[in-house]
Length: 291
Ligand code: ATP
Ligand code: ZN
Image (cartoon, rainbow, N blue to C red):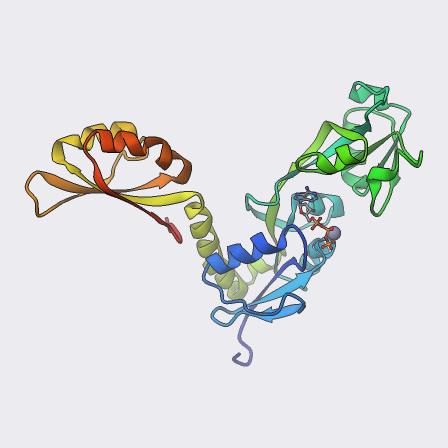
């Protein structure tokens, strides 16, 4: 590492639901990060970036204070902490919902019925704000974990917790009833990073990579050979094939057609492509799409 070289620090969750997707995203951007999972600090070998591995709850504070320049953390955590940080980009993973869950035999039917009752949560800020906006006078009991047992212990009549499939709630005799927030992992930045020219330059370079790899997600590169006169039909089969690359082949009357296609769409149309004369169909993964 050169002396005085500007580097950018990015905080990700050390160990939890966001860890592997966060690392995958950074690696998909070509960053070599081969530190041990246990280490707090990993310098990247081929880009002026250092990785900080933290508890997810601490990430907004570190980014707010500038200890980390960037962070990857759930929107739920960012909103709960209520600290000013730049919202850069939603990343499409770590999708979950913060939901009010009720005991199976609760008398509560509508949100309004929560009026005058007690609700336990590890998200008191978001929950209180939501209830206030709905005009519901509900006592919010702040817990630091294991909220799903609060109704059983008679500490609360309902809980507000993160849900993805609802299985945990059901295992505890609860069911998800009302959505307070839909969340996903978000890239956040310290406000000053964007105005510091040296950091900004690194940030911009990193963003091109991140956006390039997000663009590529769920997409494949499709190549096939087809008779020239089948090109119009191919285009009607694949909507994204509006302006495919069409290259003549050595064989008279035949062309190669190349295009980007959504991964799920490919399997649906593959037979139709063959049906209009396409052959030698090849589908390959895409690393990045830089616009
Ligand atoms: P840490 O030890 O870092 O504090 P944690 O136990 O608080 O970890 P995780 O359970 O790993 O956190 O969840 C991290 C984030 O993953 C959540 O804040 C949320 O944004 C997201 N997430 C996605 N699906 C779920 C889910 N089903 N339950 C909880 N969090 C989820
Ligand atoms: Zn946490």
